[in-house]
Length: 397
Ligand code: LMR
Image (cartoon, rainbow, N blue to C red):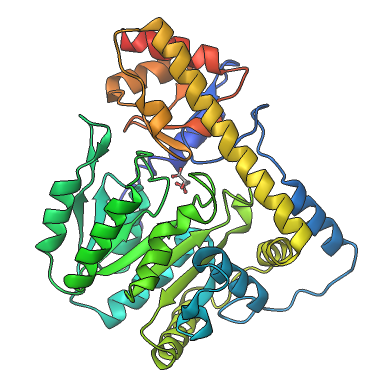
């Protein structure tokens, strides 16, 4: 009956995690998936989250369905975090925000909505990008192309090529963009480059879809939202998918959001209705627990301040690991320029390792990176960094 069903070779990220789990070598190091681990190699339970959960657990509560769009207090917290509390667009009521099943759920709801109302449009992802951007947009029915982004020679952005390409695109082409901590390269645009890109988007009437999954891990919570806020200030139409998986360390709760910035309140209401309709037809309504926790943390002054410090501590530890890797590798291989490890931002680093070198790391040293050479820096810690640097040096020499 199912012979015609195609074999699924697995996902490049999630399947590798499975392989890692099965690896019995005690020295194994997981630098594959984008998960933050602390200096002991453990996934942290944030103190802000622990306190919110303790308060919630103290009172028995029934668990009714959330509305299709999710929890109100959570949705407004998402808006404040992304756009800034005092953003005039919020007062004007022109941002439609729904709670989603993580950032992936937001991409799916946004992509389904766009495909229904802009069926002729094509979507474009950065070269390279997080694999599932392509998957989710193709799954929604889009033809997905790529735009030039990463330049391996400069370990920077192919800015001229990228902007020239944007200028060739027809109206309503959808651009999936990373406002901070680009996944997989860790290479971000400067604010001046964002200004230029947003100008082109405005002139050529393109649709920016910004996926922000690492807010707070680049510079800080506000600076990481620069591109989002600038786009709103410029009056652009804008889709934003966001996630609390990483910055609240709530991966399994699937806490995300989709915000659509519209020209006015009337259109925002139309969009909001269609987003609800889209959600109803996929999964009806989102999960409640994570949204209550996120909302409790964001909306309580004390917990919010505690949380910010916790996010910045994670950011700083990642930076320290970048510096350490740079120091050790530079000492071992002085004729090679490793400055990119320090320059890149967020959890990821495009290491420049070839697929053969990545496989050697995995086979000979039990160090797991993605085949693309992407490393999750947040998997490094005081106990494994020398071992990893040593392994890197061996495959690089
Ligand atoms: C990653 O890029 O590793 C994360 O976003 C996790 C995932 O779902 O792929």
